[in-house]
Image (cartoon, rainbow, N blue to C red; front, side, top):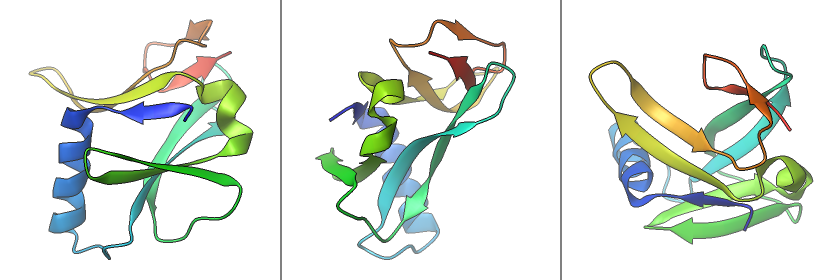
Length: 109
């Protein structure tokens, strides 16, 4: 799997799924889209459908889906959850990034 999910991030995802009463077959979909100040930005959302193009793996009780076309951009990426005084949210630790901007969600590989 090109992307992994930490236990802390998985717990936050499970909390959101419960709070929003999402269906039991809900998966967390991670991807990449064009745009952002450095060329690409991460996409993160919920989905109830997967296809043969997806890699689907379960981490700490959460199913994670990534389209195989994103492997070159996301290989080795760890999705974590940060909860600090100055900010709160999901963070992407991507070893392929050669340039990023101050927002933390835009990158270049």
